[in-house]
Structure formats: structure tokens, C-alpha cells
Length: 443
Ligand SMILES: Cc1cc2nc3c(=O)[nH]c(=O)nc-3n(C[C@H](O)[C@H](O)[C@H](O)COP(=O)(O)OP(=O)(O)OC[C@H]3O[C@@H](n4cnc5c(N)ncnc54)[C@H](O)[C@@H]3O)c2cc1C
Image 1 (cartoon, rainbow, N blue to C red):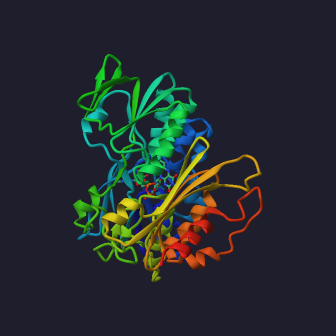
Image 2: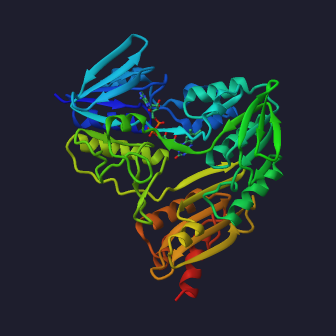
Image 3: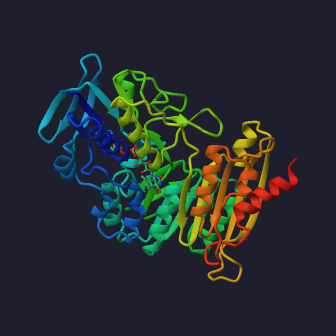
């Protein structure tokens, strides 16, 4: 009987645990999770803060009791793994019962990511928050209930979602962003979003690099060195970094992005250890190099692949094009692959197509538009990336994601069977128009 220990009970860890249980019914599986929840959705936290989700437990897919009873997976919550001795195949952990250790045959590292905070001292201030666990969402919702004036530091996906959540709670929200809103999108796409955010009453300060955050008479004083502003609270959404402290301590190889290095089968540099989720780097399917992609679909699938391979299969994780989607009020925002800045920096011979189009037949309400930008490889006519802003983007982004990750060229994309009826799309949909432009104009 194999003994398997999994560190981290988030998307990757629990997906791996369930897969191992299915393939190795007789194995012993232990999961150690430092928070109170497993199999939970941090992605739902902004919607809990804005009150669309009323009960934090709705963000938990399966409880620890479910895993223990229904899947025979020994889940330990509020248990922090402090060290791993690879020579002795032993994991040490601390829980309310004290310090203990357990032996393993195989280990899966699923420790996720941690919020990036450039100056750790900022977190010592009252009323400064980051979002990682469900408990953070509970704390933010409770503690900010009386705050009137809140800063969101960072204008990426999580910053935009938290800005919407807090604005819907009737607060004055100021987003402070050192580059531009949604910095992974090109400037002209980003400006459509920041203008819309402003029209919804959010103050957006781009090019504002926060240099200091200090407590000041019950409020938070934030400065970029030349300009200071006072807020009741600040929420830091400055991106995430792979949680690799334990991996470093164990001597596991880290990759070029700073995340845990894994092979195509998600095995680490140690034969007995697999890794999955926001703590690893994977192949960038567009550029071929390694990329850090801390996203939920990737984490779930990586857990599935790591669990399958630990159980004896040979399943390759093919990499990722980083498809991501979010929204601010009625504006949907999504991207996949590389943007124009990255294409330029990589020296790629590319052609960028930009179109503004209706999301439905022009006569069908509500009249929403879509701004679509696609970066094509000029010679191969294959899309390398797409950015979409507007209404009803999910289907189009999914098609573009398939085309980018599978290398489907503009001609095939033009003839792809994209369905049509007035409430859903114009008969010449934006994706078809973008591929037609490439076919007609790029030789
Ligand atoms: C606010 C927010 C919104 C998001 N929205 C989206 C979205 O809309 N779409 C999307 O694709 N992604 C989104 N993400 C990212 C997504 O949540 C992550 O990609 C996903 O949760 C990663 O899963 P994981 O299992 O790798 O890591 P996690 O879910 O972070 O799980 C890792 C777990 O390991 C535990 N752990 C770490 N170290 C130890 C230790 N030493 N001992 C015990 N336990 C330990 C942690 O407590 C944690 O629970 C969002 C994230 C946040 C924070």
C-alpha cells in the first residue's frame, strides 16, 4: 500500500487527492491544509465581498468531512507543514494537537501562491489587507463594512474585481496602479477599461507607484513619493508569487520564473515528489519557454495530471496559453496568449488586427460592442494572442483560446462553425472578421 502526502488542500491538492484515490483505491492519502477550508474557491471572494454570495460556505465545493467519509482521504485542516525530510521520507507538521510527523512514499506539493507585497511592513498597518484564503474575504467584508473610502493597490484581475465589489458596497474606491489598468493588456485596450471604471465612479490613478503605506490617526496614508492620500483602508492586489519556501528548504529545483521546476509529467527534481498548481511553472504554448500561470483551471488540471502520474500513468501536461476572464460591472474583459508588447519584445514578425464590433445582431437589444485585438504570426497566420473587452466575450475568448493553444490558422478560423442567431452574435462575428482581415491583407 502506497502512502501519499499532499501539502495544500486547494484546487490542485484536492484534485490530485481525488485522482489518486480513484486510481489507487488501496493507498493511504493524507492532505495537510493550513487554513480551515479545503476544495474552496478564492475566485469567489470578490463576489462574497460584494454580497452576491451571502454565505462564505457557498465557496466550498466539498468539505473536509466529505473527503474523509466519501473518498477516504485523510484531510487535516488548520495544519501547517513545517518541514520535509526527503532523505527520511518524512513530513513534519503543526496542528492544534502539537508537532507531529508522518512518513510517505510519494509527496505532492500543492502549496499555491502568496500575494506579492513589496514591503512586508505594509501589512503591519491596521486596515491593510490582501486576499488569498476565504478567511481573508470574511475579514475584509466584516472590517470594511464601515469604511467609506478604500484604496485598491494594483489594477490587475483581482484589483479590478475587488474595486467592483467595494464600489457595489457604496464605497468610494480609488485604484492605484503603477502601470495601467489590466497591465497584461495593450494600452489601447486598457484605456477602454479605465474609462469605463471612471464612468462608474471609481477613481483610477495610473502611473502611481506606491512607495509607502503608513498608519495615520486611524487611517492609512499612501504615498508615491510626491503625492499622498488618506484612506480608511487599503487592499493590496499586486499579483502573486509562487509559494516555494518549503520547496526551497527541501532542495527542490526552482525554474527560471522562480516557481517549482517540473517535467512534462509534473514530477519535480526529486523522484518521489510531484507538484501542481500556483507553485509551479509550465510551458508557455505560444513562446515555448516556461511561464508562471497562477489560474484555477490550470491548477485543477495539473492536480489531475500529477495524481494520474503518481498512480502510474504517463499523462503529459501540455502547457498553457493563460486564458483568463473577468468583468467590471457590465464590461467583460479577457485575454489569452501574448499581447503586442510581448510580441515586439520577443522579436516576432506579427500583425495586429483591431476591430470594434457588435456583440449581437445590430438590431437586437441590448446593444453592446466588443473590442477585439488579435496578434497573428505574420508568416503562419496563426493567432498568438487575443484581447477582448465588451459584452458576451466568453464564447469568443474560448474560440480564440483554442486557436492560440492549438495553432489553428486564420483560414481555418474563418471557416470554423461559429453559430449565429441575432440574440447571440452578428452573422459576421468579430472572430470571423479578424481572421478574414488577416486572410485578405497579409501575404
Ligand atoms: C481573489 C482571487 C480571485 C481569483 N479569481 C480567479 C479567477 O476568476 N479565475 C482563475 O482562473 N483564477 C482565479 N484566482 C486564482 C486561483 O484561485 C488559483 O489559481 C487557484 O486557487 C490555485 O490553486 P492551488 O491549489 O494551486 O492553490 P491554492 O488554492 O492557493 O491552495 C494552496 C493551499 O496550500 C495551503 N498551504 C500552503 N502552504 C502550506 C503548508 N506549508 N502547510 C499546509 N498548507 C499549506 C494554503 O493554505 C492553500 O490553501 C483567484 C485568486 C484569488 C486570490
